[in-house]
Structure formats: C-alpha cells, structure tokens
Amino acid sequence: MLSPSIGCNGPHMVVEAIYNDLPVIAFDQGVAMDAILNGINGFKVKCFDKEMYAQKIYESLFNFEFNFKSDININLKNKFSSSTEANEIINISTNDLKV
Image 1: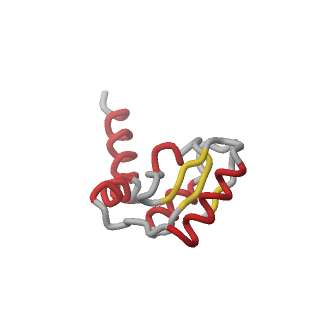
Image 2: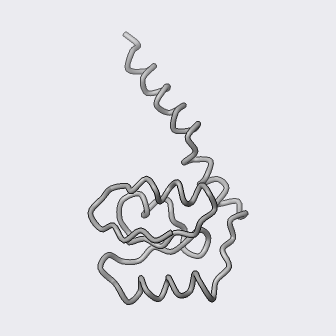
C-alpha cells in the first residue's frame, strides 16, 4: 500500500494495511512513524524524498520479502487492533467517569 500523504496525522489506512499484512510505503510522519517498521512491514521515507519513495516501491515489488510473522510485527498488529483500541477507549472513559 502506498501512502503519499504528507499532511495528515493518520491516515488510518496505513494501520489497516499493516493489520492485513500489506507492506506499506509512507512518508515518515503521522501514524507511519510508529506503525511502520522498516523491512518488517514496509518502509518509512523522509518527507518529500521522492527518489527514496520510488526506490522503496521498487524494492517492495521486486527485491524484498517482508517478515509479517515476526514477533515485533505481531505485537504491533495487536497494539493497533480494533479490540485493543476499543478497550483503551473504554478504560479512558471509565477513568473519566469516576468521581
């Protein structure tokens, strides 16, 4: 999945792609900074570096096998799962409601 966004703190499709074992190539900003692990589930590229962006696209298509079953990627996928996010929202709400 290619994410050319340079002005969005998401985009949420980066996390969705990672969760579905799609390699992601995105600029190093927003959620990509935390969710993409270079060489594990995609590549982060310095913002506006179009040459590196093109190179990483080429590498992901022709020269690289991603390791989606690595422990670090599995832990990351669990962290960004919808159930984990829902539980965090419930915990935060519960704590806010306590008097």
